Length: 423
Ligand SMILES: Cc1cc2nc3c(=O)[nH]c(=O)nc-3n(C[C@H](O)[C@H](O)[C@H](O)COP(=O)(O)OP(=O)(O)OC[C@H]3O[C@@H](n4cnc5c(N)ncnc54)[C@H](O)[C@@H]3O)c2cc1C
Image (cartoon, rainbow, N blue to C red; front, side, top):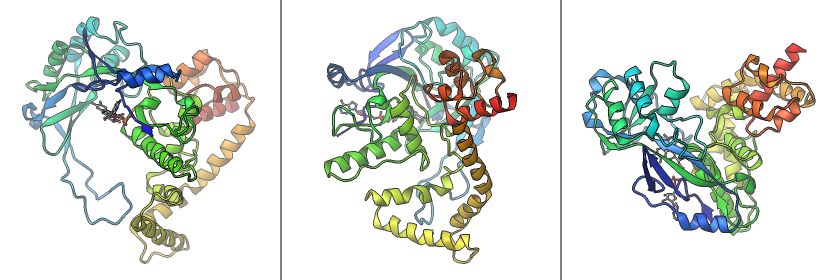
């Protein structure tokens, strides 16, 4: 069985001083399952996320806004042959918050559940609420908003960038200050949702619970953030649940094979202190993990797991032959994207060699002393998140830093390079 309860376990919604039970707006939460997990002594804690108000697209003044068209070329996720995109393509538009809107937000902070301390769970660092952005980056005179149509057959617009749990009145006043949205009608107000999640360190690399063989978990219940993270975990947990039921070999993707492997490894070994977002900086081998070589990296794993249909397997084998011919210098009858992939491989080869050598040297240099927390801001390439985590844990060597929860390979590399230069 795979449990994928999203934000529903013990879900509670917050908007201004309003408090509602719910997994999402107008959807009941799941309390019984949450209680059952707690009664089994599974390690459960709280996280929070949020969502923006939805707008009626017919009340937006699109003529005043910069248009963001869809990709013009025929790029698709799938490597299977396909003559065209089947669905009609829609455009988005861009607008921004401004000082007037920021004043409205500041005036509403006293009712904010985030700022009044009503929410105990940690929120997503990489998609903060608009009130968080205005509070933390007070010097910015505006924050970008993408206006995204939610579907082909309705008028609802998702204003990406203004997730909020401020009160309804403040949301209405904020929207009225934004260019193009002055007359926009809110169809659903934004809110924050706090929910139970399972400490993913209680899972193995198959996303199965150590203590309950046959039970697998995927998505936000494991402490991750968004769609892609949830989808990838669903694939891994689903494959392994099926393998378990049929007594087949487990499906495991390692860190060098794909971001799925990086994410699962990070989740089950390090756990989370805030919703986990997959970022390229979390991968040691990020130069090798390109979108254009996903077929080469992953299809073989899928074939071995029995999860690839005949049409894809045959197409993969045909294109593998083309890769061999392209590497030998052949240009005829080679799919253009296969040729580009081989070209990219050649272009990246020296950097990959350098990266592999650096990783090896860094591993041999683990006792090197790293800067004290007070001087971390002088290390080029260290993000605010990394400085925060290192300042709390105060490691003194590279080896200690590598064991601090959430420290990325990119941060270790920055610390190591800085230490070597300063030596
Ligand atoms: C309004 C909104 C906007 C979002 N926008 C973005 C975005 O722009 N980008 C992004 O990356 N992510 C976004 N997300 C997050 C993204 O939707 C989630 O991270 C992702 O859907 C999580 O997948 P999941 O499988 O963990 O849970 P969900 O997709 O939430 O699925 C959980 C399912 O479990 C069911 N369920 C719960 N409890 C039980 C039970 N006891 N019994 C039976 N069924 C149960 C629920 O009904 C629900 O169908 C958004 C989320 C919301 C709510």
